[in-house]
Image (tube, rainbow, N blue to C red; front, top):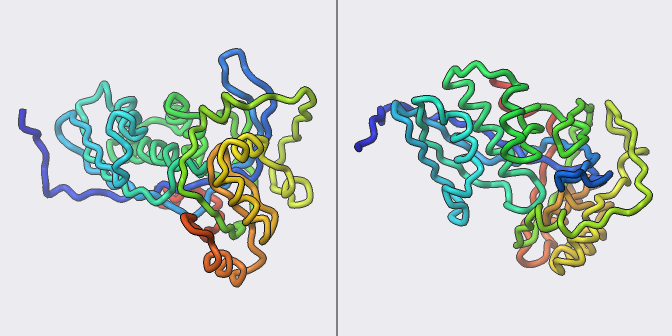
Length: 287
C-alpha cells in the first residue's frame, strides 16, 4: 500500500547529547543478573542530531547515518515501536550520528530518550516524564537518565536518579577505533568482597569524587590492547578515566592550550573530542 504522507511537512530537529560517567562503582549483582552501581552522569555538548517528521499512516521509517546500525537493531526504532505501537501515528526519522558507538558516551540511549521525548511533544501524547522514564528503562539502563534531563547521581541499574550540581567542566575525550559491548564487559566483571558504598551527594566535590575510578577499567584494558595503550597515553596529560563500559577515555585539561596539544599529538586511529559539561538536556531548554 502506498504511504500517505504530506511531503511538504518539515522535519523537526532535536539534539541528543552524550554523557560522561565521572566515576563508576559496582556495588553488587542482582538476582536478575544485572548489577547495582553508583555513578555520576554529566551531559556534554557532543550531540547526535535527530530529525523527525510525523506521518498520517502508522509506518516507522528510520534512516541512520551509520550503516552498521540496521533498522531492526536500532534502539530508536524500538523506542518508536514501544511508544506508537497502539496509535495510528507513523514517523520518518533521520539520525546523524556524531557520538561514537561503544565508547561509553551513551549515544544510543540518548537517541532513544530524545526520540521518546520528542514524539511525546510533537504527537501531543501527554505522557509525564515519569511515564517516559518507565518506558525508557525497557530499552536500556541509561535511557531514563537522558529523560530525567539533568546531571545525576545514579544508583540501582541506572534507574535511581538524584539531581547533582556539577560545574560545566571542560573535557578532552579520546576514542579508539573500537566499539565495546556493555554486556560483554559486565559478564566478565568479578565483584570484590569489600565494596564500600558511597554516600549520595547533591553536588560534585573534587576532593571527594575526582579520584574515584571506574571499576570496569581493568577488564576493558585487559581485553582491549588499544584501550590500554590509549589510557597510558592520556595519563601523560592528566588524570584519565574510562567512561561507562566503553572505549572512551577522558580527562579535564588544564587549559585550552593543553586541549589543543592533545589534539595535535593524538595517536593514529584515535578521535579526539573537546567538550564542555552541560547542566541540562537541551530538549528542556526549548520545551
